[in-house]
Length: 120
Image (cartoon, rainbow, N blue to C red; front, side, top):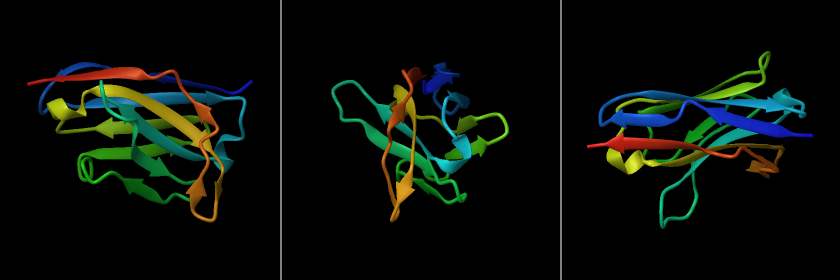
């Protein structure tokens, strides 16, 4: 049974930092692409960052230069370091995993989400 469990969310002031973690089990972690998504109230879920099994990364324009995605295959962990946080970063953050084919990731597995709230 595949499980993705996020942690590290919380309340932080604008300009602060948080590091989200996601522990995966039940999948061959190193073969999957990993992503962080977020969903703010009343908005669609959006992709924040992607890290492929080959090490390539991609970020939403809104977080470039502030967020960093990384992985530890030995621990089956993926991280999202978030710096210079803004109130508009407030959302539920989800980690996701899935295979990539022809540069397209199919996210088959999702975590339950962790709340990030940035106060002004």
